[in-house]
Length: 227
Ligand SMILES: Cc1cc2nc3c(=O)[nH]c(=O)nc-3n(C[C@H](O)[C@H](O)[C@H](O)COP(=O)(O)O)c2cc1C
Image 1: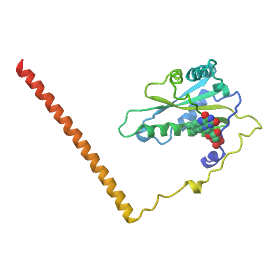
Image 2: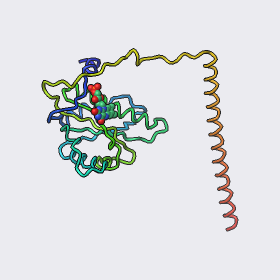
Image 3: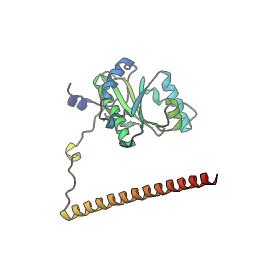
Image 4: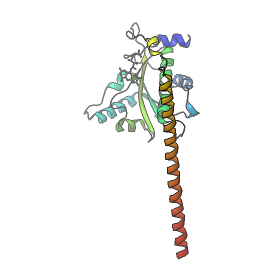
């Protein structure tokens, strides 16, 4: 199947059966999904597989987050949940939103590959997704956040996942607005002014830092002379 056909055929399955892909199959698919575009190759993501009682632990964490007395049954809707984690890396070049885009890309491609392999998948989230009890249950680090879970199971036989909305690609693919020469000149001048102000601010900051350093040095020298 071509990538075009696979993407056209993909649909989310909100109800799935009790079987799920094993770890080895997942490893193969994740190895491929991890090939998404990744600025500076930071690999700012990881996945956590939740099976069996892990899902009950998630149900308890959801209840804690929502202040409910009973554990949530939501995670029991599929035999396998794959938690999608964005693991932010320190980078001057790649901001956090770009790193989320990478983790999100991995989840989308993995959904597609699972679908193509015959598994039913749906990406789900909830108000509790970024709550403390849920983060704790997944063992997230301080620089990690969840993007939700891929619920994975068997596609129910003889059932269709429901109708899929069509995409009006012509309306969604546009060109930038055309500017008049005057408007373009004004936009360029504004951009230049913003750059200038940015440079001035950085220079001021550097001067302040140098002055502070100088002051500290003088203080240290004076102290040394006194002693
Ligand atoms: C980040 C994210 C979170 C989502 N959360 C939910 C959710 O909590 N519940 C839900 O029914 N669908 C959720 N969806 C949408 C479904 O995954 C799915 O795309 C939707 O049901 C449409 O089906 P389709 O993928 O077949 O077009 C989410 C999608 C994304 C990308």
